[in-house]
Length: 65
Length: 350
Image 1 (cartoon, chains in turn brown, orange):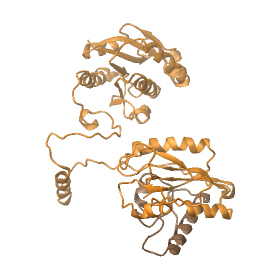
Image 2 (tube, chains in turn orange, purple):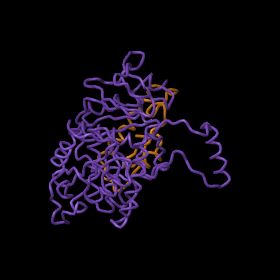
Image 3 (spheres, chains in turn orange, red):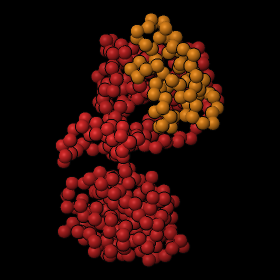
Image 4 (tube, one colour):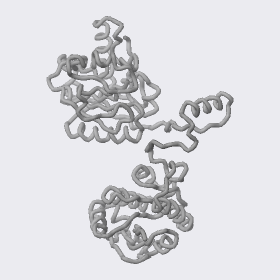
């Protein structure tokens, strides 16, 4: 899970899930707690999906929120 | 007079070729094969030659290393030379294995030479000085000369330049140096930028390593039975940073128990904070779960989406950290993860 997906690609990560920033990858402090939780819960869920998904090459998994 | 020891294989010792590649380690207090040449070129006396068959080293590594380190235990020497190994893969491996072991055990400089195609280069260039050598023994004189010239610099206690200045394979180690030109980084960076804008050639001080391909891991068959670990390069640590992980250019990492913890407590609560010097710590200090999403993963554990969360999370700082150090720390972490039955990892970076 990384904000800098191009760097993750360069160092060879194969299953990638984007996060939202460098200082707060999974929860923007300027938004309500509830929204932060929703985002974090969703993106960690995408990471779990990524772990059980067969892939052939480096793949960036899509996030909805 | 300083003292040197040379390691060679059965072929260069004149013992034999493939048929003698199982030759067990031997030490002779004399100059054998290329040791004569090295002795001429070196500002040191080559007191001993160690000989070992390449296959013996390849298939009985532990035994071979133990025997050779045993030979050396009572001998004084200032430098250890292995090879040159040219393009001979098994010889390159042998030079690397024994070179690394000697360096670790006796803390003496170790110098070798291998052709760029020799697999020993990538395996050991981080551990010992390896110079690019020729393809075959026809280059013995040139390659040995290069080894000896650098070894002499070390023996004289001269200031050593960078890998590119000296000519050995880049080890991925960064040093703090006082530049002779005393030109600060800001000026050098501006000069580079101007050259880049003008389309002129410039040499980066921090070359970006080429893309590293990692084999794709098989998917986890059944997440509901899997153990998942959290690993981060975001520098989240207990507030007292017990392992003294550095805030930048980290060489240390830690793992901290999160058994039964629903979410990471924050700095104010005296629990966790970030020590990462590469980003504003405010958001991570207030809620470390923004970097290590234990709370969200715990929710998935309670729902039965995953089997369980591994008892520890693993952490280091990923700013200014060289790829070589990062790879080493990663390997060290993986050893724990493997031994403790972790099936998959969620790695968060900042």
